[in-house]
Image (cartoon, rainbow, N blue to C red; front, side, top):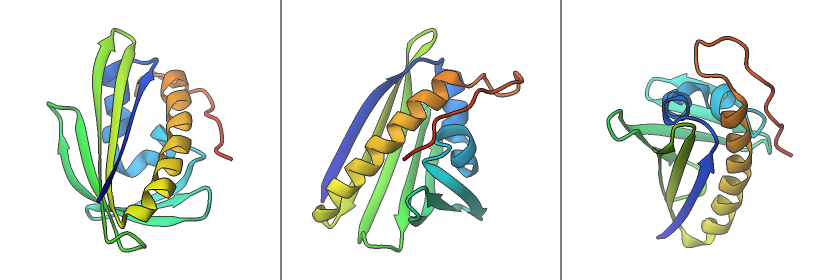
Length: 146
């Protein structure tokens, strides 16, 4: 098994970032618009369509409000095992550390997963830093993944 570990800073408050991350069925609107072009919920699974055309089924494994951690597993597809978690930590009042970890088999998929995560991170950083907190009104445009 290979682990892909990514950590980055978001220029937004931890509650705002957690609110977007925990909204499992709205990843295409609140977290990574453009990188993820569609998402639909089917019970505890989301069907995610990426800008590349790739479609993935991701099972919600757990959501821990107190730890601000979400865990999911891709089911079907090329990976024989895929489990990922994302967790956010307050760094300062308007600064959040975002930790995203993915375990995958076969190990040969790690490069592909890492590249996808890198693309997603760039969109998430921009989206989260330029969006207003939930319920506050206007939201700015996020970049499109390319």
